[in-house]
Image (cartoon, rainbow, N blue to C red; front, side):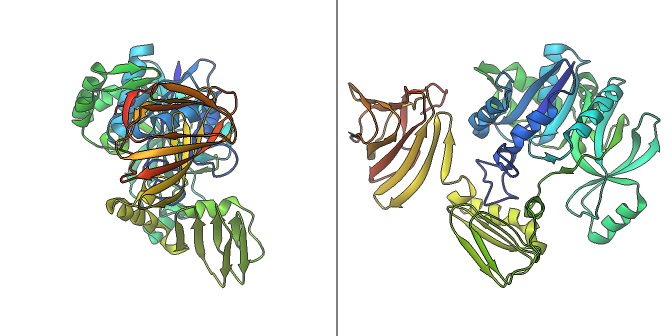
Length: 471
């Protein structure tokens, strides 16, 4: 049996301000209507007639992961929630332990990040089938992407002796090289890009993990032993997992084991590691400019501009990347794109909301978007999905006014319940228990005006909640 393991974690720093810590790039639709996560699920489908899907991701992204899995047709896929980030080795260990318990040690795992682009999905599936056959022999397979340029942003794998089954022994893993070294790698023909995609049986991986990183395995076993099921989520023992060492699967296992091989793959792969890739998605004009959205350029060359919410005009720009969102604008020379991550981390360290979430914030029941804010007021646009409802809650420091723009709202306010339709409104006094529900079949849209001395999201006391969130 084949189990596809979807790694849905990510920090959202390299594509800031498009991606944020609470909404990293795997949830973005960069090249079409589907998110990268949805595209990954579609790509993994159809590899084997008898296959399953298992996702591993962070607690903070649980409802977004669930929604994207639902949209991708994988509503029944279980999701293992990591209480804290511990890199890829523990994430894969959790998946291997869960798969082994479910289907035995011989189940083949195909481990894939959820935030990569693959242009030739059929070539990927064919390679995955070859890798699964090799992995069944007790071998750990990693894909090596055939390089088409001297790329300094990727790690490399040097191939050793050919095995006769299309795979090669691994001579060594190497870190991201400088430009001169990358050119040497490309010219030699011995090196491939490390895609971070792996195929092995659950038992083989756990054997190698026990040999080379036993503390990781022990911590993951303890975390799973104390886990509890919460609907479609598996919640780990938080303390046991917090004690787990933080390490990548490459460092923990692949660079130490003698059972690893590399299988060459040419499938139009890209890890979307910077805005340089996004510039490749569009059709350049005669001056090499690529733009999306409401953009006007004059005397610009080799410039990429993305406008998400308003008109962006550029004059005399050369080799720049400009990204505009509702609350932030990035202007960066193409030679400095690797520094975007550092800027995002700096903003996060300063407590800036722009590093954490978009103006549109996603919740399990829908989303809300900031429209206006001042010292004692805040205006939001709220969308509640059909059949969903917010928690039964109250606020110590703010009152709220709700105006229905579209759909039907069922409102609980104190001991009263009322139904509101388009153009109707209600008032929620400070300290009053209340709830908002959408009993209809179309999304409920309303404007919320908050007034009070403190308007933070942490001023919520929850009495009931369908999504297991605490006060």
